[in-house]
Length: 329
Image: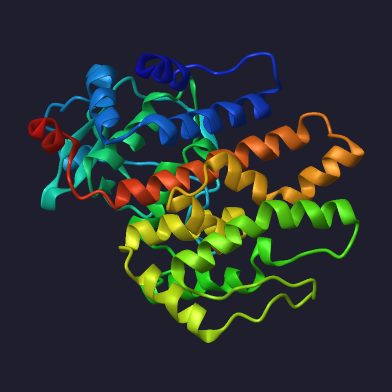
């Protein structure tokens, strides 16, 4: 199974347009990693990738490499908008940095963030995931497909200079306009579909977090009690800055706090979360038909971004290194 996953990580699907093929590749890579790479699987990944992730020769900081990466936030004014460039390295490796951090090395040069900081990951699991993104690039670097790298850059550079409290406030704004809280009154078939698919998730979060959210057909949406907002604010406050960055990213992709929590808590899968967030769109596609390739690309890209965000939350919450877990075995 692990060899098959690694093979998929290193291959690109053929027979479709380039944009759709790249989206499928990235989506499948992220979903497969999230589905199968447990903490023990990461150890196997580390051993199977081989020299690409092995400790490199000491790399002077004077050779550090600064690479432009795509925007994660429209407010990140100093971030480059370059989305592709020719590949310029052969080997990818990770190494121990200062303060228990892990660094990414491309040949003998250290990776830097778009803001000019040394690229570091807080643990080995996340470092391996990022290194794998760079290692699986072909002749052309497709920065728009490197979601884990981009999320790390955002956490490191914090281009909008936001505090944890500001991120939490921004994330909770989506609860007031949560996708699954807005219901239609017609047609009856869509009303039934929304009730059947959305109500179980809504009931799960209300019971699990002891909150009241509700749903509404009013354009203003349901009125969220302050007690519910306080409960979710306290819950989000339990995440570290890195994990919170990833969680907010998942929320913005799904346009739903409820679905994001259900995904991070492993109540639903990436595929289910994306389908539930696109429920009305999928209903319309079933009724009117699919626009060739367009809807497929949107679906695969949303899966890729959502899976990467969920992985980022879990990996950035991991305090123990893969090496330590291997020693425990």
